[in-house]
Amino acid sequence: MAGCEFGCDYCDQPEARRAPRRARVETFPGRRSFESLLNPLSAEEVARAVLRLQSGGLHRALALTGGEPLMQAGFLAALLPLVRGKGLKIFLETNGARPAELRALLPLLDIVSMDFKLRSATGRPTPVKRHAEFLALAVRRAWKFM
Image (tube, rainbow, N blue to C red; front, side, top):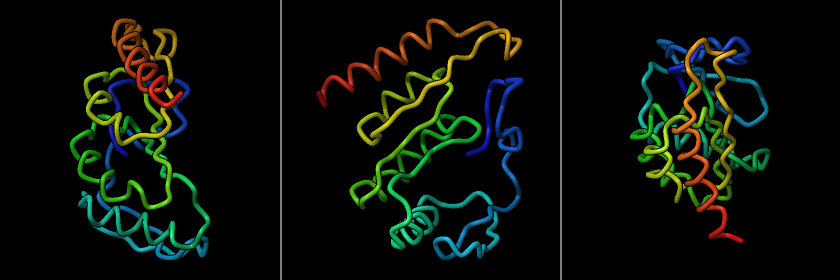
C-alpha cells in the first residue's frame, strides 16, 4: 500500500511512498503472469485478486505492507471483511504511529508487526506516545486470544 509519513533511511520499499498510476496484479498463483490495472483499485477488485491467488493453495496469509497500510484504513475496512474467513490470516506490517486506525481494524487482523520509528532513522521526533498507545491496543487484543 502506498504512502508513509516517515522517510526512514532503511526503508525496504521506498517506491511505496507514492501510489503508482497502475497496479501490477498477478493473474495465476506462481506463474508470474500479471495484468496492469489503473489505480486506485476498489476493495472488490483487490479481494478478487487475493482470493484468486489464495485458491492455488500457495498462500496462507494476506500481508498488508507498504508504505503505511493504516494510511488507507477506510479502504482496509472495506477490503478485509471480503477476504476474512477465506483461509487466510491477515498480517499487518505497520509503523505503529496510527493507534486510532488500528483500534478500528483490530477485529479484522490476526497478526500485527510494528516497527519503532526512531529519530535517528526518520529525522523526526520518535512518536513515543502514539507507539505506546498502539502497543497497548495490540497487547489488549492479544490477551483476548490467550
